[in-house]
Figure 1 (cartoon, helix red, strand yellow):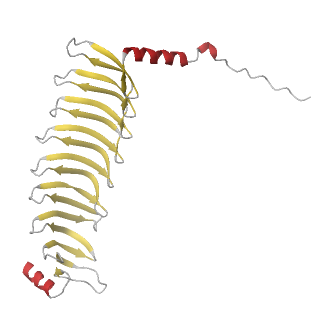
Figure 2 (figure 1 turned 120 degrees about the horizontal axis):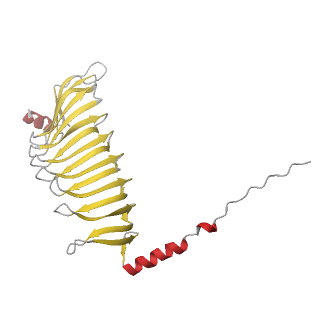
Amino acid sequence: MKLLCKFLLMVGLPCCIVAQQTDSQGRKQGVWTKYDAVSGDLLYRGTFADDRPVGTFTFYYPGEQIKSILHYKLDGKIIYAKLFHPEGTNMASGKYVGREIRDSVWTFYDINGAILSVETYRYGKKHGPSVIYLPDGTKSREIIYRNDTLNGPVVEYLDGTQIKFKGFYKNGALEGEATYYRTDGTISSTGQYRNGIREGFWMRMDKKTKSPVKEFYLNGQLLTESETRAHLEQLKKAKVPKSGFKTPVKTPSKRKS
């Protein structure tokens, strides 16, 4: 068949489509097999009904290695997909809606077939839990997306079970309380993030003394003890004493006589 397509290309036909069937309205019907217009390589094979893909379509890399297998449901509104690396191993699997827009849970694989990540989509955007894996199959990171933006708790691991970091994302940046852990499971440091940078007092555990060390961050920069005292003194002076506030007294309006 490939030799036939190459012959047709030599005599001037731009492409080769086998078992071409159309109805009186010009709509594709039945099984279609299409070859590349230049190389003659097989591109896809599948079935159409009233110009819409139905059932199973198989797409190919050059050399007829399978590139993807798509299962069309509900007149093509939903597509269950399996994608493959050129080497033949799994690359991804999940569901499309509409014109191949990712939806629901997708699983991605490396070239050896090991899972790289399991991610949740809503109409083309990451929305929901996402888990990233290390090459050995253990968890590396658990995160939450909302409309393609990090929003929610995040947990990072050393080996799939030992926690390395716990925090929270808001609109794509770390926000609020965060804790870092050492390889032995003890806390390395803990404190607050604001708009993705460290802010305020952080508690760090000294490796040698194993005692807590209090540190102060301003706009992500670690201040020295003297800088911290000066900054806190400035904040204290900037505050207006409570006695300085006076509650306005509302005087009754005089009635016109």
